[in-house]
Length: 177
Image (cartoon, rainbow, N blue to C red):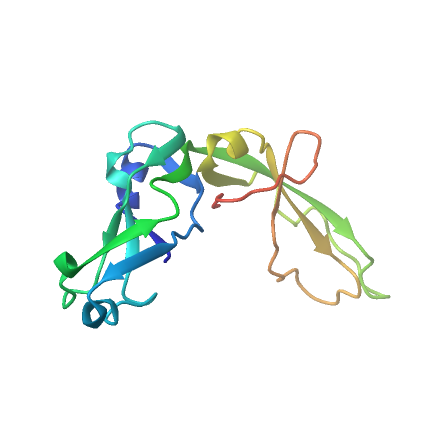
């Protein structure tokens, strides 16, 4: 049965975010009256974790509740589970501004030239938001402008790579910018 996390907004309001443990399942064994058990399946039974009860960053072991369909008479069966608690990691969420750094590759088409004086990309910044352990490593957002065969204006879409102070890419799970 999938684990469903509720009230994630409560974490956001506390500058916290769930960073590990989101793809968990719980195996339930249900015994009781057959007609009631037949009403249950993986699509209508869920394990609910209420995140509004978490106030601190760190590794957490939290209780869960099992949610059954409304037409199931829960007093007619009982369950056992392969785990009694859900383990997850919550981290402090921060935002910071980082410099945008660009580089060029390739050559414009023969007979064309680029006026680097009119290209205004310098002094741009992006805001990155995510777990403090990741965001604190990021010092710049890099992208490369491909000039190969260019015969007109620079109107490309660019994909940023978030990098550390050495210019190495940072693995950025749960980071938005």
